[in-house]
Length: 212
Image (cartoon, rainbow, N blue to C red):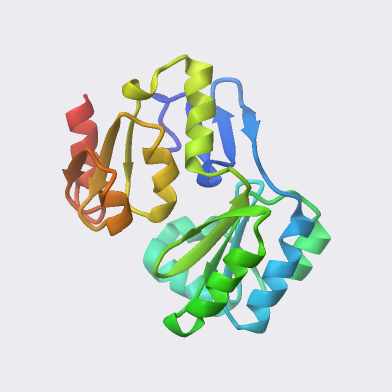
């Protein structure tokens, strides 16, 4: 889909960036100073949690084990990801703002994850059963969608979205038509106006067909 020309704008990195593909430029950037993420990353490393981050639209994966797991799930999409042995050292050497970080955890670490969410209130977070995301305060997909709606001068009722995860909740709140795939989280299903098949099947295609 990245090669297609039928769409002009792309909301990326969990809503942190919006690209105007026609002009080849960013029209919105809500990334975070990399130093703000260092304490979280160090805490996660001490707990041996899985870490990925997005910097300049590049996906960074810490550790070969997590990289191989991602490769098994996402196949060739992972080929452009950067593998690093130490996310903290990588950020300190790169010195670029960060769009988001994802922390993968098991049930035994849930209490520590909840503590981190409470501790780092200067960032927004989204918690799922497998990972927690940290990104800019008041950021996320809803923020990016709201900005793009203003650029395009469209009303909320004219916007359609399709999602499956808790981090889609802010986006759902900014749209009129809200398509939820069958394998979505319960919290997202509560906000849906339409339900379609699983994202592992043809749920997104069905949503697009209904919209068109």
